[in-house]
Length: 255
Image (cartoon, rainbow, N blue to C red):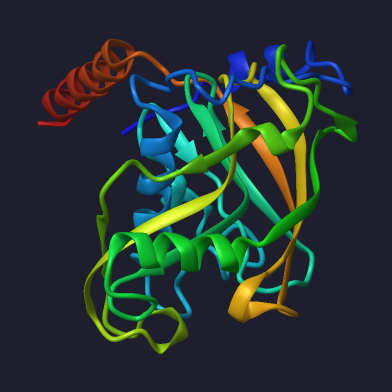
């Protein structure tokens, strides 16, 4: 378990500019030792592993945002619905953020019987993507060269399929079970943010193609982020030891 140092956070927050910029990681670079293609598959497995009504993509306040904590990185959630949503979340200053601007998942046998078939289904569902944006504190984030557009941040899941475990009472009424799947989408990885408070806002629009022509999916998600300072484990253990010793002395004093 991690703890934040309130005193350190208060000092650091005072130094964060309201126009603070995050450092976007190139789409081909590793994040916490993982390719972003692999992370996109892990995000999909995570996103669909929660039941209807308790899924972080349905969260309208941030009450479920803690589910995104994956240790060295933190998954932010998109939405299933086109309405704008604002959430609050706390992350740590040593965590990468992984953000789903737009995405699609396809599974065997619901959307095809082969990997090739479900990859085509996911591509048709995703369709033509536009209105990609990522702002922090109202500022559009600069892209690292040689990328020039958020459309450069396309990620497809690695070759082969991956299993997605849908729980009982899964979203969209999908029967409980493990489904071999593929994913495609636009994900952004951010290097850890300095301690402080940020407003992160992302949008997208997907106009489906092929058999889904006419379907439109949009996202408009705002996160009010608190970036906290994790205390070293040794400091936490030392604090517990001091409290334990103090309690023992108090018991002896009254005995």
